[in-house]
Length: 621
Image 1: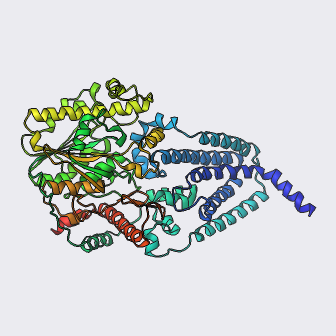
Image 2: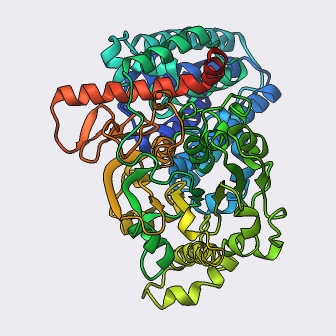
Image 3: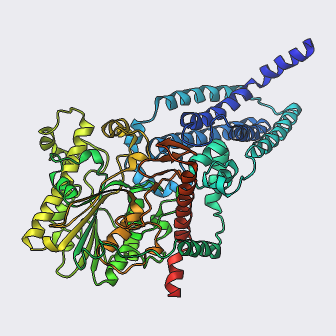
């Protein structure tokens, strides 16, 4: 007994730096999963991700232990640095976007770098503590590592390798077996989440940091093969099983042959709109068709372009995948909104102050059916005024408004985060805001001031339309791209809106205004996929409602629910997330039926863009 005890003590003294090695890598996995234990149906305490992590650490350890000292240092410092950076990226991503980072998101680097200071200011204190702990452990590992590899090290590495394989095998076995279609619909199947990888949060919580990283990297280097024939059959079956949707109702063609100015508001959140701060927007909203339960879902990286893409094309990108600006730029979108209007004899153009290369807008907008994308230079807006929305109307009006029937798509900018006292759109409107609020919170004041700048755009636009006698023949359809999702303003927004759930915070304004229209409040739940069919029907545009996963919000066949990137859904009363009802009450049959409908929409919507389905429809017609 004494000999065994002495051998154990000897082993610990000789190899205790290996324990520090394991702790350093283990802490990173804990930091990535433990704080977010409630974001998935799978718990931090599940066996599978823990043993996957143990298996990878033992694999690293077996390699590290047999390397010469110099290569030991290089191996350890390289991998611990890489995974600390990956961990930091995950923590920042989770805080700002509510899901884990993927290598697919590298396409967002250009936009992300513009907010680097904002991200760095909001790094949680525990991550800094973890960095200090990692540094201490790393010093021990490097200083105490064996300078010379001996026979025992090879034996030990072999043991580590064997236990690595055993741990990985056991982890995979703990995923269990698939439980059939119904269980897949609920996305509570760990094996489905491990292989499918379409729900990042579930996949991460099933895989752990290291297996998730390796699988994510592999999926990006070697994309999975897609069975387009199978996808097309699934899409055709889905549309045919829906039955023929009646394309007409009492609102069909009420705006027939009128001009349309379609406006996507940058970051106009609910709390910014009021009679005092945004009087023109407030008037348009309350004197038009107001969809008060509208959601712009953050289905993929780049929420501005995601909403831009969905609202124009009527389909969704692959959820939690790469930014869709480059993935589908060559797809056939003959069924997109601007193409439908162009076929109806409209002049179609798009307008935004940003560079046409950003989000690949030149190619995307042309493909959707816009004749030309106009940036600030083409609209004659100087660099001094580029961030102030009023100049879209002051300088760009002549480009936006035409004598013949037109569809003009405008993307505003001024309320773009951050909310800063140094920005002209805040400075110029701050005094107006201070007259209507007692708040001293600089972020809040600038948020309102920047929103007021967008309101000035509407004021000038309506004045010019009235001067040209075009007001009575022009419709404004207005929606926001996303809520104020930045972690820097998270607490402020949650308090102002009395809501803490990231999905339900995605409710944003959507309203349609025309002169002398009878005000109407629509309390049905709508989302970005419903914008195209709703507008098409109001304008009497020839379109086939069976070709879209969204529905006309003013019709009787509208699907009264919204789905989110984590496959949860909300119908205005019932909020179903992570395989449980978080709000409201409902019978189990209703939950199952609605969940199946949600999963069908997600699956078919993604199949449409992944298989370029519209090309097949066009060739067959």
